[in-house]
Structures are given as structure tokens and as C-alpha cells.
Length: 155
Image 1: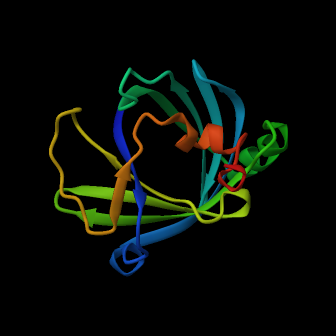
Image 2: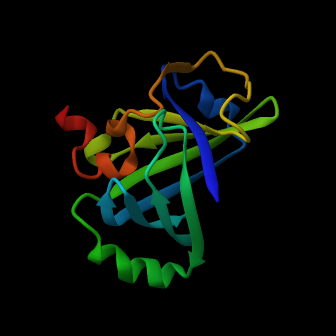
């Protein structure tokens, strides 16, 4: 239940032609405390409640627990969330033995595109496509829970 991931800015939209899959995501946060976030997410035709713990010093690893819920339940919970609903399209791109999840944000976060890659350990090597830019792992501004409170358009 420990999630190990790294985050990068995306410098070009070439990833869209490489994507094997894409879907719309709408999510809100019942709690955005840095010690624990509680997220409600509708991802395509599925929905989830997720609890994430505080990240380690590098921001690479943190506790994550997720449970599937019905879309109807998620739709009922979203209005209870803190201000700032996140809307984005997620693209999945295979790169070597890994899959990048690239989020193109809309609404108040329009213009922001972030790629995430999940790893088995913090020192694992992975290929970096040409469209991958600056690493932002550990930069709290790029956490969805923070983007819901201080959107990219206000930076």
C-alpha cells in the first residue's frame, strides 16, 4: 500500500498520439490536510475513494489506500468536497516496461500537463520520452489536493 511515483511537467503534446487509452476524471477532496488526503474520483465509468498519507522527504513514496465505490455514491459525495473540483483528461502511454499517466487539466488548472510514473522502488530506472520535462516530484504545488485549493491559473 505504499505508492512510489515520480512527477514531471510535459513539454509537448506528442504523448497524445502515443496514448493507448484516455478517459475523463472528475475529483474532489473531502480532506486536504498534508498528513492525510481523502479523495473522491470519477474515472470514466468507475469511481473510487482514496486515502493518501504524507509523503516521505523526497515526495516519491507515500501510503495510499483505494476502494472502488459506485459512480452514484461518488456523485453524491462530490458536493461534500472542499472547494475546488479537479477536471482533467488522463492519457496512458507505455514506455518500456512502465506506463506514464499524463493528466491534461481543465478549468482553473487549464494549461497544466503533468506526467506520473509508478515505480517498484525509488531507485528504479525508466525511460524518459522526449516530451517529458522538468521533474516536479515532491513539489506540493503539483499535488491535485493543492491544485484544488490554489489552481495553476493563480500562480
